[in-house]
Image 1 (tube, rainbow, N blue to C red):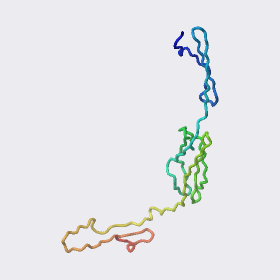
Image 2 (image 1 turned 90 degrees about the horizontal axis):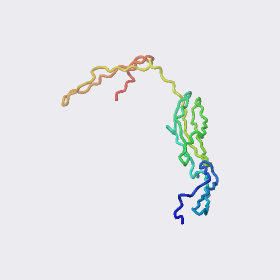
Image 3 (image 1 turned 120 degrees about the vertical axis):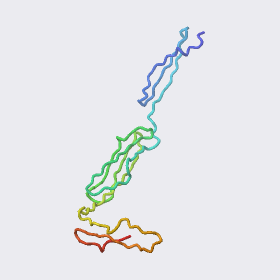
Image 4 (image 1 turned 90 degrees about the vertical axis):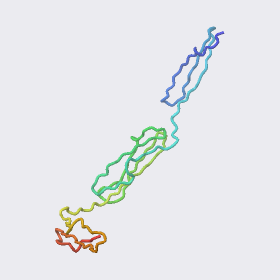
Length: 182
């Protein structure tokens, strides 16, 4: 009697864990008397199950405003499948942005995982007409007249007297009449 001979079991066959298919392993053992026993096992390697669509994450704002003539600069995006594998390089990006014309435009992001599941994301781009700035040297000047600060004493009968301000504009000249006190 040999007793426990599990340590003598030989296993033959190969499994390619990265290639789907059915693989067969053969287990062989012999006792001291030369009696041989064999057993077989099938191992099936299957493709991963894609049970959910991938996810696209947009970096930055979902709505971006630019002025006509400006270039939109992509803030970035990432994509992963439901197994956690990075599939960012598979993302297809399309847009209809015309930075020369005011309007609302869309950038569309699309990705499909190895299981055929798809995900989409959209970023909105608002192109606005740039207003012409006023020349900086044409701004009016405003000069406060009198003391600053003005000090009034409690319980005195001295009323506050507005000392006003002098306003001048290079185009219109004296614009004192346009000064508003609030």
